[in-house]
Every structure is written in C-alpha cells, then in structure tokens.
Image (cartoon, rainbow, N blue to C red; front, top):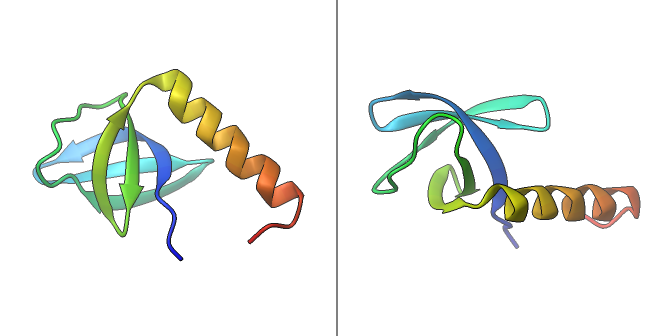
Length: 73
C-alpha cells in the first residue's frame, strides 16, 4: 500500500519541485498542479497530486508522526 504524504514546496524549477518532509528534501514532478514556493502539497509516487490548506497538511503530518510512534508501518 502506498500513502500520499504532505510536504512543503521550497523550490520550483520548471516541472519539478523540491519538497521538504520533516527535514528531508526530495524532488518531485509538479505535473499539472499549480503550486508555488511555500505551498503545502500532497505527494504520491513522486508526483504532486493536490495543494493542501496548511492546517490540513499539519494535521496529516501529526497523524503520520503519531502512527510512527505507535510503530504502525
């Protein structure tokens, strides 16, 4: 099972964007999603699939952190 994860856009270069996830940085394809630096986005399989409101992204990030603490993988 794959899970889409929220991250923050820190840089855009053409069709690619650098995303920060809990101090980890990765490059993903922004495809057809209109996003800008500073946006929170949902990423699945290396592709941005949605721009998220910050409160929703923070909630999802906390949820993933809580699951990790419980040992859920």
